[in-house]
Length: 217
Image (cartoon, rainbow, N blue to C red; front, side, top):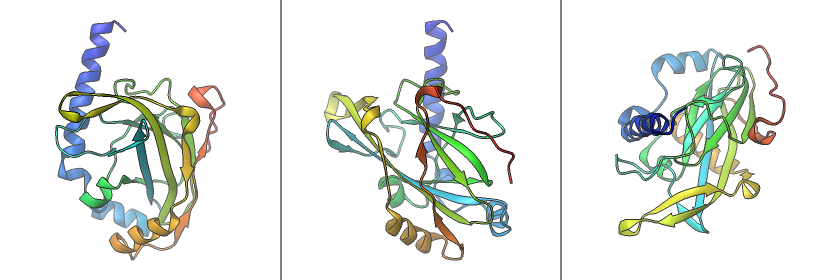
């Protein structure tokens, strides 16, 4: 793809992402339809936390408003996509959980691949991303898949802002904050049981390894 065209597509994606991340539609509980599917065992609330630091200094991943600096890109691969990650928009239970880095998705049972890309380095298909594999079991209403810590390098911008330049891939780790995850589940969706912790695991980097697919449950 030609350079100018690629940049225009990226800028359009960035504008859409900033608008979606700043809108109230991404903050709140799952829709009544999704809650019905969750209660019937056909879908699960999947909770994870994203933490980031730039050159050792904490960085707020999910900044609010259209002034949010360089949103990180998230993609998810599934049976339907042939395992290839496609762009997704995170959801948040509240402004505070968002500020603290907690996001959630509503997913059918199955095997998925999470991709995370630094700002200015992703497009809709995440062709060069490292992957983390998550397996969502059937009939589990609330699943915590871990806390993804993203050490990064960056640069200082005007007005004291910092921009992510790249992730330090070899230093990325998955942490278990099950106690806090359980508190979040109890606060926002106390009626959803059972709660299960199934930490995502690192897959082969940059699509070098085989993608494992299985028919959805």
